[in-house]
Length: 390
Image: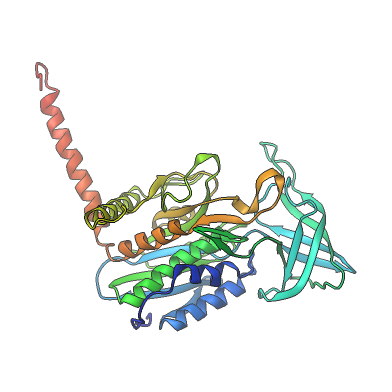
């Protein structure tokens, strides 16, 4: 059973959660540092942290009765290198994740222990990039690299080697960070749990923090196949998704994600999320405030964990924020920090809070739409009769 959270005063400022989480080094199968921080976060708020189905993390908040559980799932890894061999100052690297092999040449890397501990000033410079065979479209991805350690630097097999860009810097409303995808998704889920625990709000929220998404949605598939979530849960995959090509606008609010590059998610869940977003906007206008902003988009730049949950039996939706420099692919072929808008992240947490209090209405929102269209259909029969001029 989840622990009962004790209201603990005002919620934590969002920027504080961002700085605490986004700067933790992580890549696929080496997410220990993030999960240790999740455990500390839960304990500080009287919540329990546990692991399910291969080390995927869960933090659960439950207060009051009724309504379906809302699962908010975000992954805890980000594309990065792992040291596979050390020979003097030369290190060999395996890349975990997806990035064009047009990137990486002569880029600097910063080294971390497998648990994310900083190796100090340990840096290396890539001397050669190892690329995959071309895809049918001709694209080649980074598979690995060799690099040369700086004088005095040391490395060990199993270390993380991550791009030497800003770990986390907030300028105005823009977060610049090495690992927005998907540690900003983790932040949005934690902010929701934090706000609900601080207020003592009624609801049942399960924060799900998965591993190894960047190498094939492995953590999400393990959770869904093991039926590690309540069967009646509404599952929402939380992501940062590339805004390249005009897919979305950064700063225009959180995105209710309809699908991804290969799949469309539950129309019922998407309809319910949209209804809640519209109600939030109307409430703001009534209160004389700027209306809640949101976007409704496909976001087909890649595949998201919602596909795994949906195809393996859970009623699933998705939400995301617009991401700049997706997977650190910056301008002119150079690696750069990813970017997100802090207001978009705050809006995502606000949307999730309301959803958590309102899961009973998924059926009602859908039924209302069905009744409306049945009425339109009945009226259409009359208006379309031969000889009718209505």
